[in-house]
Amino acid sequence: MSQQAILAKPRRNVEMVLLVLALGVGIGALAMTSVDKKEALDVGFWLQAATLTALAGIFHVVLRFKARYADPVILPIVVALNGLGIAMIRRLDASNGTTAGANQLTWTIVSVLVAAAVLWLLKDHRLLRRYTFIALAVSAALLILPLVPGISAGDINGANVWIRLGSLQFQPGEIVKITLAVFFAGYLSSNRDLILLAGRKFGRLQFPRIKDTGPMITAWAASVGVLVFQHDLGMSILLFGLFIVMIYVATSRASWLVLGVVLMLLGGYAAAKIFSHVGLRIDAWINAFDPQVFTRFPGGSAQIVQGLFGMADGGLIGKGLGLGSPDLVPFANSDMIIASLGEELGLIGLFAIVLLYLLLFTRGFRAALGIRDAFGKLLACGLAFSMALQCFIIIGGVTRLIPLTGLTTPFLSAGGSSLLANWIIVALLLRISDAARRPQTVASQTEHVPV
Image (cartoon, rainbow, N blue to C red; front, side, top):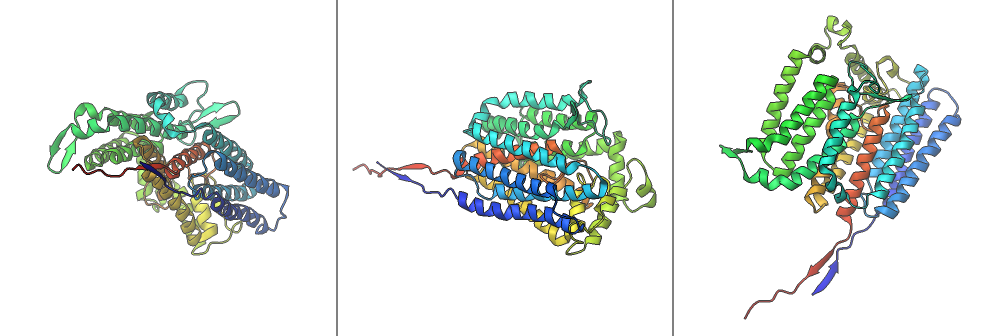
């Protein structure tokens, strides 16, 4: 018997070169926002540039020591998006007189250090499988927190999704998408055979037994609960969509997609009829340019229309960073940051941003394809899809493809909870990709034919 090692290159030097380019995007955008406003490159600019460079360097060093074979493209993409987001938020601060850019930089420091700690301490992603049902309990607790008196931040912009920790506000639902992905991956990897083998077949579709639909019904009920009690349509869609995709990947059965779409449509129709804010959002989407809908408050379409006008004003190449008027759009640095970037970077700039996201998602799915254990495959797929679905929901809402919801654009929008959650997702994807690309020892055995 002989052993042959499958050679794989760490490609950390490739990552280092790409990081230089990514930092050039973020720091260059920071410089342009100052130059176009005819302002000097002040101390704040140099501090933010140095901080971004140091954080990228720290994370890169952690990868060299703890995940040498991790995907070399993921970190540079995230650094570029994060830096571009800080630049746009800082540019809006100059127009609005706010300090969201400084807060975003602080949350970036916290998020990168936490993600680096996750990567350093979690030596094997399969350890998370031990905490499958603990992850479910944590998810339930986090979803309930915004409803607990004393720490609940109350109704903010029509949704009750925030908790107050001293002077800070935090959205627990952003962490739930991680803990639920861990639960779904652990549960489905352990019960896949039971779900596949049992059930009845109707035509070309095979549906599971009623008792095997328990987790799916639970996920549907949880998403509806988020909508009912917290009035958060975007997170409701995100959580349910996460489970539908993960169970489809686990079973490869279209029946789960059919059942999931039916439940989603039923829930959406009922929500539009029962909850006025959902009905108003759908009306604002369909009749956005109706003068009565435009001026209606609350539930009007002014935000959507102003964002569309801003992107139209940007045209193909944009007005230039610092030269547009994105501050005229409500929530320009959070919900509508894509419209802000579209006005100043134009259609070409938006295409570049979307392309970066597509590359990020595909690298996550590539890690899922390369990993050998079922838990890792499902976890990587679920985490990558959660970011992809979140981008689709918010970008689709801003461009009026679908009704607008209150989700953030990953790494770009102002918001500490979203930034922290997505950096943790990046750390987990890098850990899984390291395991997928790490050299394996394969035993090659000479075949003996009996005489």
